Image (tube, rainbow, N blue to C red; front, side, top):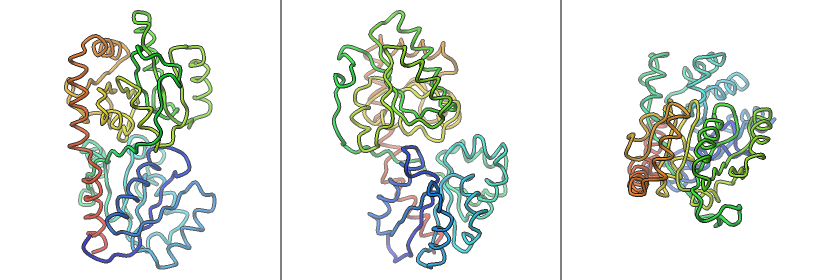
Length: 344
C-alpha cells in the first residue's frame, strides 16, 4: 500500500459462528492489516450492532465500510441509514445471489447494490447472474476469487476419531443446513459401502438449521461408517482435512466451496455437484469430477477408489489449481487496489 488511508470497518453478518462469512472477513482483515490498512470487524450477530454501527460512523474514524452478503447489507442499511455517509464496498457471498436476489429478499439486495460503490463477486458466473437480473450495476462489478489459507493448527489422527488407517475416507466439510444437500453424499456412499465396506464419510461443520440437523444427526447416529465432528475451529481444520482421501461438495448451490478448496490445496481430488458456485471451479476430469445425481457420485467415487494413478494425478492437479488461482496474496492485492480506488 502506497498511501495513508483511513480506518476500514468490515460489517459481517456472522463472526461468532464458523461459516464462510466469518472465515472470509477474518482472513481479509489479517491480510489487509499486513498491507498497512487499519481494519476493524463488526458482526451483525451482536443484538446491539445497529447502535455500534451508528457510533462507528459518527466517530468519523472510518473512511470505508466493507460489507459481506448483499441481503444482510441491505438490512443494515435499513436499520442504520447513516451508512450512506461513507463509501460502501460489498462482497457478495453466494446465498444472496442464489436465493435473495431472485426471491423475497430482492429489495434488500437491490438496496445494497444501489448504495455500494463497488460489488465483489467470487467468479464470472456470479457476475453473469447479477448482470442478467440487474445490468445497471455492470460498472460496479469486480471479480475476486477467495484466497485459501490453512493454519497448521493441532494435529489429529484417524485413531482419535475411530477411523482405521486402511479405510478410504471421503471428506464433507459442510455446515448442516438444507442447501448443503448432505443426504446426496450419504445416499450415494451408502450404496458404495455395500460393495466396499472399507469406506468412511467424515462430516465437518456447524449446525445451522436445528430441524434439518436433528433429522440428519439421528440418521448419522445409526450409520457406523459416518462420523460427524461438529464445528471445527478454522485454525484446526487442516489436521482434519489431512485425514481424508477425496473431498465432496454436494450442495444445491454454493458461494465458493471453501472447505473443498482447502482440502484440494492438500492434494485431495474433489467430487462437486454441478451447481452455480461449483461450476467452472475445476476442469472436469482433471482436478476431480462434477456430478448431477447420486448415481454419478457413486460412479466417480468408485473410480477414484479403484484407480490409484488417477487419484494421485487428480490430487496433484487440485493442489496446483488452488496455488495458481486461489492464492491469498492475489486476493489481498486485489482488495488493496480496490480499497485505494474507492478511497482515491
